[in-house]
Image (tube, rainbow over all chains, first blue to last red; front, side, top):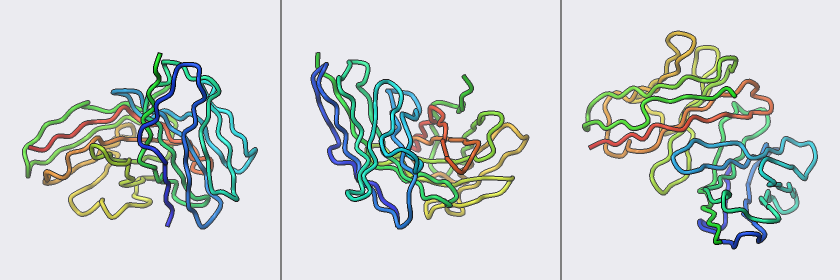
Length: 114
Length: 114
């Protein structure tokens, strides 16, 4: 069965510092991988996706993630945090050839200190 | 930019009552999903819907739940007899292409069962 593990339910960084949000997955077949962001009182917004093309994926708002098959990881990074990045971030996986339902991690709440 | 809209944003109901949560997916999308997020827990898949029938459903989606696309635009989730444990945020999502499976989410309906 597929699963997603996000290490750290809460990450706090200073403005301008590197953001690193960790995601590990388990899947029996090559997966599609996603990062979604949820701002307060809003829905889930797609940040980026990996669908078996380039392993380094660039998303919106300066975020990127690298698919590492050997480590079954898809960590999300941003070189320099901005106050507006404060939100909850969800990693999700779906299997190629599946009906498309997403399996989500528990989420990581990112706080950015001035 | 097209978006998925959900109504109401907050629904309060008494245990045992029926509720209908409404969603208007993006107009040219073909695949529709419901997810829920119990407070403090991960986002969980409930059901996917395509070509006017359920494609896949999770264990959570028991006989108390049903989905319908009554008029070609709305996509509804009905809970026949609500239980306290149904209290959660319910998200609707839609996608055009199951292949790359980019799902667009609504802002959610918070269901409170008293």
